[in-house]
Length: 368
Image (cartoon, rainbow, N blue to C red; front, side):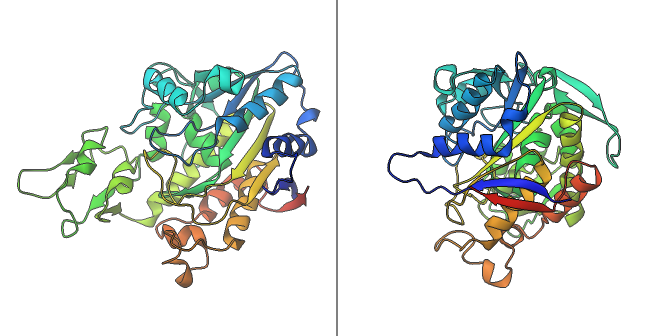
């Protein structure tokens, strides 16, 4: 059966605001039907790597937190620590980065808690059924301690999974550092020596010490030490680093879907995606490229699969912004996501999520 997905555009008449429209969207999509009285409600979102300016503004988070509080819930914003080098790999740096980007208790109206603790080791092993890669997942303890989960997602492109939507926000985002290692473990990149400029950027951004750059030589990757996080792919300015085979991305997409099932099973959940500043890469980068399509709107649903599919379709139907990374490649490939990142295919993620019973790719779009 088709799942309802509610949508509102980003046009605002004088006297209205995007935050007001977001609250109306949540109510129309049925958030008031959730019993939140006295319950801990985890609002899962991405705080943005400092230097990146495409992450969602804290104002959106406050609107969600206020709605939860209005219904008697006890909201908190959360995300788990990262695997790669950056400023969010432990709770101290992660919280400092969140505050720097505007996510403070004062600005968002609730507490901000890092889901997997100080060093990313505070996790819970969560068993689940139906996985082909995992039988259990390592999820941040604070995420699993919550009674209800709400995902608030910046919908965008992604260099390893094609797109970053609700499933990625939940599956990858709620995994502890060990969980992220498990999801990434088959993604072993390689370096094309002919393209390598020996600049050392990949070396500086490898948290596992897997990249070697001998004096006067070219960089190489030790697959024994590599965690497969793909960070080196994103930071290389010369396209010298890539994944070995497409199956790596397929496996990563499937593993994220399985982690999402572990997070959501057995408790109420609700999902919101904001399709704005649709950058071609993840907000984990300390920079962001220009958006590839115009701002499209806000979507909400109880079904994360239907929500992601609706956002995918909306982006693929949108006009390409001149001068963006998509302009040069979309003519030969009408699918915006695989045009930018040819090694990916978003269908793997959607298909596996459906098989796991996370939701349906069939949806009814209800416009407000």
